[in-house]
Length: 286
Image (cartoon, rainbow, N blue to C red; front, side, top):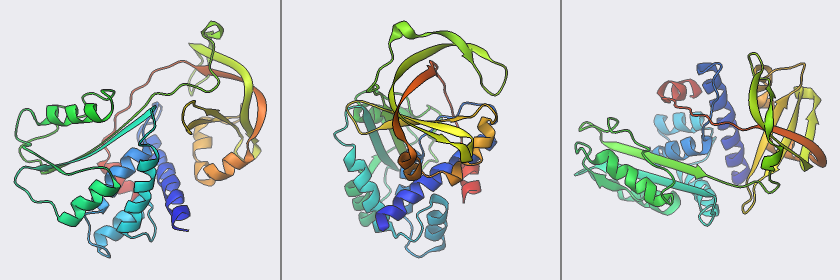
């Protein structure tokens, strides 16, 4: 029951966070990792007093329900351990504390054992502080994530820095042939634009969702148990309408509705960047 409650909370937090990010960034492509954000926040939750107003408020905002800190830590420990040997996904969790400050022994033990994050001392007033953090993240992600901390983010007034980085680079189990990529119209929220469209026609897990006026497609990655799920609004609907219905769609129910079918898939080739200061978002979520 605890595992089910934890999984449901992760999903509800992701949906709620997505809703707030969309409303804060109309018309933008939004790319983020709810797991990354929740891991960092959960590490903070470990430092609260059980039963306190702060602990209760964080549980509510992070959708941990009635789970106590130890149960939250155990659940994240299972998740993080499951990806330790994954070659396509690398994760780094770090906690830096101002040099000279003492970290509670039990707090440090939980972070090290369950979150794979040993508290580290640092002089935030040093010009090298950001570089030290960035080099550590690089070392934990096979040099895949660089410059996660900006040079001006840390100052002599900083006392604690939580860092989480997730890098994923996978290959499709059913790959696109570069020869089939060609320029086509892509219909976004505005007028159509010409993009390089990848194409493949193979068997995928697929579902029509008339209740949500959308279709769903699952595309698996090779060498791991990860997959991308794409929700596409029907022609008579739009992305904004679909996003408003996300809270009624569970991943478990969505997966159960999918069947293996031959599908003609076209996906635009694109790059995107997104940056968000989360203080106001956290206050809204809570």
